[in-house]
Length: 183
Image 1: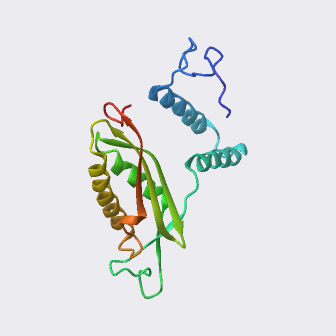
Image 2: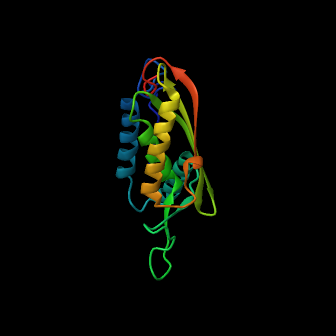
Image 3: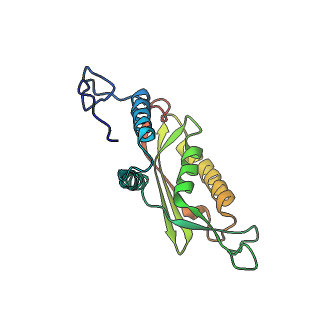
């Protein structure tokens, strides 16, 4: 069941027998396709399957980083969703992904980092680190992003009374010529 390395390929770049050190999405796709083929060809009762699955899942979890639950509020601001006291939570991983999508929509800026702080199941701080495009009015952009980020957070988490403009901080770490999403 193990994937055997192809002796003709440079270990730095499995897609290139010539030893080029660049990787492309085609290379990644080819590697994934080989892995899928190897897994599918293995017998289901293979004793090593559980060990491999556990190892892969552990690596994916480490890659993804930790996630914390954030309490979602009902339309009236309550934290319970029904008479039985049920609560709904949203993962910080989901929040970061949604914020990243929002911050990648315009050619005036791109995110370099998104940090969330959760205290007592509530989101208490959002730190956004961005790269801006040269010539952009960064103050006006930051003002607009504050509004958009808070609207997104309220849409996802409901009307948490502790969630306000001071929750979100924006830091421009660099200015680049051209579209920061492609630089």
